[in-house]
Amino acid sequence: MDHFATVDGVRVDLRHWIGGRRVPSDRTFADVSPIDEQEIARVAAGGPDDVDAAVAAARAAFPAWAALPVAERSAILRRAADGIEARIEDLSRVETLDNGSLIRSHRRGVMPRVALNFRAFADYAEKQLGHPDLSVRNHRERITYDPAGVVAIITPWNAPLMLATWRIGPALAAGDTVVLKPPEWAPLTASLLADVLHEAGVPAGVFNVVQGTGADAGAPLTAHEDVDRIAFTGSVPTAGVIARAAAPNIVPLSFELGGKSPLLVFEDADLDLAVDIAVEQFDNAGQVCLKAARMLVQASIADEFTARLVEKAAALRQGDPRDERTDQSALVSRRHFERIDGFVRRAIADGATVKLGGGPNEELGGLYYRPTVLTDPGEEIRTEEVFGPVVTIETFADEPEAVERANDTRFGLAATLVTGDRSRAERVSHRLNAGTVWVNCFFVRDLEAPFGGNGRSGIGREGGPWSFDFYCDVKNSVFSP
Ligand code: NAD
Image (cartoon, rainbow, N blue to C red):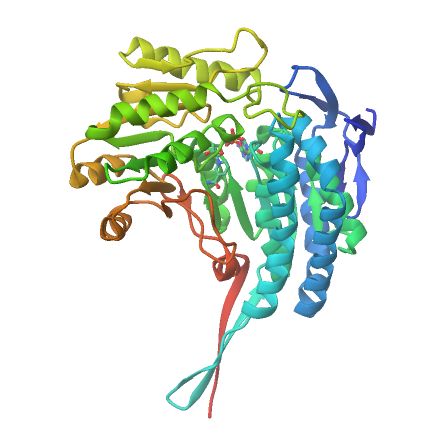
């Protein structure tokens, strides 16, 4: 195999990163850019042997990394954040070509957040990896956060580097070592991350990358007996497979999964704001777990809301994600494109009304799909996660019905409501079944706050101290008087 590819001018190593060195594979898999469906690289296709080697390297590196004083680990992670900031342009270009997401989002939002995933958890570790002693019946109880060991991290393609570092940052800050299995549809920035962490002084074996498919590399990693934690971000069916693989080893799991989040718009809402939030749901071509795909609008304003959303979404500029002016790019792969089109075609056959889009963008061809707004949705499109530029609009009569409809899902990741009534905002946000509720805003969140989903949307919470609860073995030592 060729060990390197030049991707939009950036040199990327296509091998695994195990124990502080690059390791090739006999086999490779094709990495195809969604922009034009051309192959951009052939990446090492890892298997059980590579996974064994990576877990062994992570295990060997664990005692020394865990024993480093928190301040020293945090200093290294802050250097990693600096390294990411210095390479924002490279990382943005590679991610854009790899998964088709907008370069402007990477430059201004995603990649700075990737750096923050290290900087913030370096700070939190110094502040939060401790707990005041308790005193019970004259005994002193000392609570400590011991690093858990080797963490397996498995990530999806829609925001690969951001979602990986959201787990890697706290795991490394806690004193764990990591084996990352990046998504096969967008594997490249994980390799650049290995370079950045190495240059920042992360010791050999503390961070490892095994490239490959879910079946060949992900499955042996999640079934591995020497893994102490599994952090998985991805779909519900894969989560079920991973939970079964991990069960015999009794490994704690942190799952961040799919959603079918509602956007509730009440008649007392600022309609400009509601429409702005609604249009944001087409960001990253709707390939966002938190996206509010199910719009529930009070009947009295539904026609106006729908007309204004359609007008704004129709004005979204589709095209090449490397162009700063592009609003919506191509879908990640042919398979994903067909899946989304299947949902839309069945929804239409099922009686949905197409208010906008409803199919591929024929002018652009390739993997470009029109922003699609459907009313009168049937059962499937109302309940299944589509993960594309498709939203449905339904109406409700009053607040109790709005809450009931919003909660009528097996997911529970996020919910957004737009209302001008503060007491309604308090009432409704309390009653919504979701890990995150946004009131008159969308997508803002501090990394110190808990993040996760209810029901099929996941297991556990991460963020600030919640991350350390997962990445550490919390110990209570009781001292006699
Ligand atoms: P996916 O489940 O198909 O794949 C995710 C990862 O799992 C990939 O790296 C894949 O190679 C790996 N994998 C597949 N089979 C495996 C197996 N048997 N064992 C171990 N690993 C395996 O998901 P996807 O299509 O890449 O991502 C889209 C999904 O991710 C959507 O459902 C989306 O909502 C969800 N997501 C959730 C969040 C969140 O924070 N809750 C964030 C982003 C995406």
